[in-house]
View 1 (cartoon, rainbow, N blue to C red):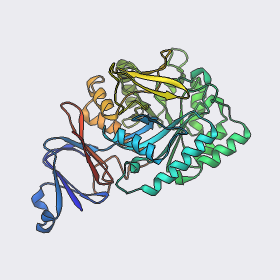
View 2 (tube, one colour):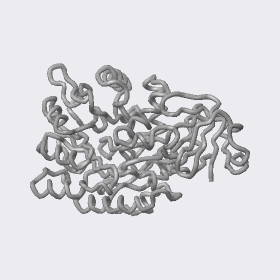
View 3 (cartoon, rainbow, N blue to C red):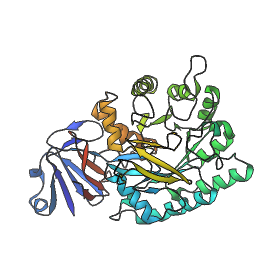
View 4 (tube, rainbow, N blue to C red):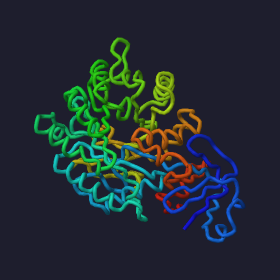
Length: 405
């Protein structure tokens, strides 16, 4: 069945349009038309019309770092039902494509999650939020314990010869879809990075004590991004630019940003975005949530939300996830919240905030010919939201619509 989306303020991934209508045909966008009257009489009688009443209609958001949602963490307990619960939690906030992200865990858990992702792909195109899953993100376990954050130091491990081959065997299969790995480049050999990249794996640097020189060696080996810029990495200093300096100086590498107002000061983000644009042009800074199980959960009477991570209770309160000792533990951020914060905290134009939430991450994972734009032939992955209160009212994944109050 074809669907016609009318009376929206359309953002197509590049610019805003007034008075345009979007025609969906099954799982794809068929056309952008000037007026419903442009349709043939037959189509006008056989199309489902959605009157969006002035909402912003834009490409669905693409989140490359989702640890959990609605009480679910990506972990050994996950099954298909749990993954669908998690994707549903984020879909209501505009996310139509995501990478389930496994925080450093045992090898058997990595294999289990890989098996789940293969199963997910059998559901592609169904009326299921599982279609939002485009691959997998392994954040660790090859990290530096000095910059471990909330990762379990007992699980973080060096790469030995057997581990190299096992990792290459696990990650080298394209049937997992997008494969993204976060590692600390100073604890692995550059040949390991190069071998991963040769197998189509995207390698991002993070949870690292690497200096500027080591970071640049990793970039030459194939590192193409930096995980949650500023957090869990060596800072920019006057005589040692560190990993942050390498990230901002690199012309080809992208950076994920957690724009929640807690992980990084808004002034630091404003300066970083401006510096990166001067050095590399637009398109290298994209939004991530680093969301935990608290997103979508029902809060307790005191406003808090709690969940378990490796046997430790994490509490989300006032939008911040922390351990009992006060260590930041992921985030309680949503993608529509990140877009709002880009506009309200960083003074970015809404158009650029939306690109950072859709087109730029789609480009990084090499899916920008399929998602990230509202254009003929692209996937019918869309979101419609009210810009006055930043509430998502509709989402479409592969053309299947959900409505929210």
